[in-house]
Length: 433
Image 1 (tube, rainbow, N blue to C red):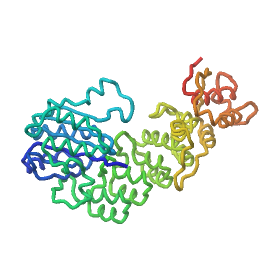
Image 2: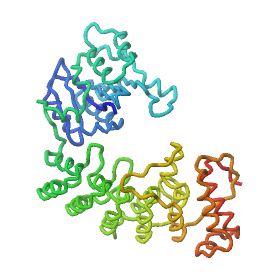
Image 3: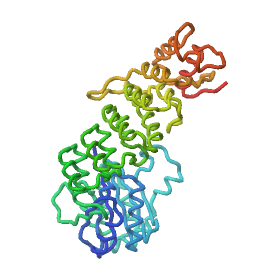
Image 4: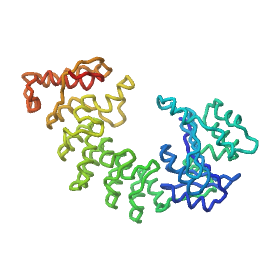
């Protein structure tokens, strides 16, 4: 695995003012270097997530408040080199060495990230030409941190400062200044570290000292969500007892109950359900967590959620009801369709019985939203046709079931409609007739 890091090159010699502005712009911690050749380097902890919106926002805010130019330098896995340049709060230029690395992009988007090197000449060392900059950006590199170092040299920065980030800096001995965000302290940072490491005793000691439990890790994930995703019940209890927000969500959605359900941590799910009971926020969060449990294949947790009042027929974030997710075998089915092989089972994990999952949902009253379909293409999903056959047999004529007739008011045979359901959701491309 290659190197990944983010740093910011700020055009200023005023270290004191820069430190004050940085403290007001960051979310947790940052390292600030001394000025060199009219530039100060900032290493932000949250930017280690390499979320482009986080990076764009910090670059813009620093340049606006300091009324200067700021370069954001990003290297991802030694494969991609990116820079963003803002001046006085306005985007000046941007470049991406591989804009289509994560998937196809249009010509217009590629053009946006090609870089306008004429705009950079005013920041470069005396005597630097556009051709010099072009040579740096077009040259083939085995490791993109080499490009970052060469780019730094033509712009007058110290090369070693442009090819590292917060994590790497903190792992070495340095004399740079550590900056804390407003409302963030060394104890706050210590709590984040101890939760991340699973140090229950250390977490309890800091919480008893009065450190706020509503901190976030470097990826912007609330500590309660982080601990829940790792199944750390003792830490979760201490965080909740100290007043942590039970419904705080991570970027993109998902709270502690969702994280525990997706991770298959049943004891934690039971604890969080008990704590959330009666809260007006509980119902919508239960809906999302229930969907996560189905997708992840945790049958017993699905049963727990049904007993807690989860709606078995609700439409979820994915736009599909739980029964549909179960019919395609949740994330497992999606993974196997993408990679063309059986999804590996991690240590201590149990293989999901998807037939049981479907039965649990049906017996809870799940409606089969079937339509007669004409299949145009049979995808890899159908290599497990035995499960289709099982469901059609289970719902076939003569089978005694408390759901067999209740959900088919149009009197179509249960067998036909169950088969239609599974084919419809597994076939990928269908036409409704």
